[in-house]
Amino acid sequence: MPGEGDQKVKKKRSRARKDPNEWGKKWLVDTIDDREGVEETSSIYMDLLDRCRTERESVAYWRDLLKENGFLDLREGSNDDPVPGTGFFLTNRDREILIGIVGETPLIDGANFVATHLDSPRIDLKPIPIDGDRDTGLGILRTHYYGGIKKYHWVNIPLSLHGRIVKEDGTCIDIGGEENEPIFVIPDLLPHLSRKAQNERKLSDGIRGEEMLALCGLSSIPEEDNRPPIIEEVLEHLNSRYGIHEEDLISSDLCLVPTQGSRDIGLDRGLIGSYGHDNRVSAFCASQSLLLMAKEGVVPKRWSIALNFDKEEIGSDGNTGAKSQFLELALYALLDWSGHRGNRRELLRTCSRSFCISADVKSALNPTFKGVQDIRNSARLGAGITITKYTGRGGKSGANDASAEMVGGLRRLYNKEGINWVMQETGKVDAGGGGTVAKFMASRNMDVVDNGLPLLSMHSPFEILAKVDLYMGLKAFSSFYTKYPLE
Ligand SMILES: [Zn+2]
Image (tube, rainbow, N blue to C red; front, side, top):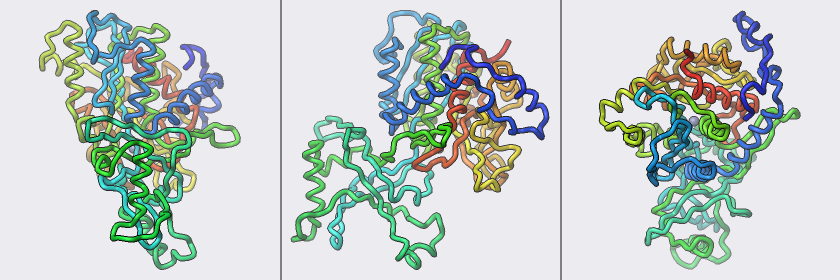
């Protein structure tokens, strides 16, 4: 990301915004002069997308990068007092990472958090995944999808196996991302024979959960006993490749993710197509801004912290999700480090004086399905970062519903800093809905508001993001860390 003031936002845009009828008619793409900054940010981000297909891989990426750049791993402890400007991080079970920079004011006076998540919808393997089909001689991986997907998106595309296997002796084997890795596919039915078998089903039933069988081999041996021989063949391959046995698969976190890497989309190359924008793009903007602040020697007024959770796509449960008390434990440790007693009262005080952006991707207006959006309250690709006052469904149920004060503070900041932003809600009233980690942060008595970058094809194997939005997201979170709240 460029330094401050490198990009000039033309004045004409803010004039346009004053007239609500002009809403959305001026595009961000016209207002950024720093094209080089946009491309540079995009290329760093696309490299991350290609390396990080799971939350574990994302945590490893950030941990290595932060270490290289002098951030303290607080698990290793620190003998020094927290000097303003010091970068630090703390991981939880290799699946969650908290990244921070010590601020000038005491932590007990509150921090600025950006809360995101690193997990993405995907196709997990069942605990006993390997099966064989006697009639076809095909090896099959049985799967159980993770997160809210449209299952029919995931057939007939190359899928790669990623994750960790824990062997009986406790050794961990991480797989995925190797060159020339074997790939897998969930085969759909040909159109010629789909008329009765599939076309009369509801779209959501086009492929059912138990039909998501990924091909993993073709038998070369005729069947002799009750167990299809292909099972043994697949196991032999796994054994020679990774040194594992069938029972080792029981103690594993294995998933199938799209093999296709990130690509520029469009003749102008203005869009990025990739698996996993949701929500590695928010984690990137939140964490990369801290990394850049540290590199540039920027000392924030308040402690600045990126919370990169796991498990958001399945409700934030689990000990690496936003509902876990890892955050409390981390804050106790940080208060301790700051010379406080680190008791519960101090913790509550810290949280109640903190501000939080819950950063997650948002639905962009889709040219084919505009009917699901209230156009005046929707986001568009290329129009900047969204401020989303509430999420939820059925009368805002499950929403944080940010206060007018918090939205007002952010609006003032973004206007002052030349950040392009739009107000957004998930869709028309009662059209559906969704949620983020906002409510879990708000339950800690923080002031929280949702922000995010608009996507098309969200939760599909190939989600679409605008490069200029990415650039603006990074700039927005940097300004939140360093300048919020405005004096
Ligand atoms: Zn999501």
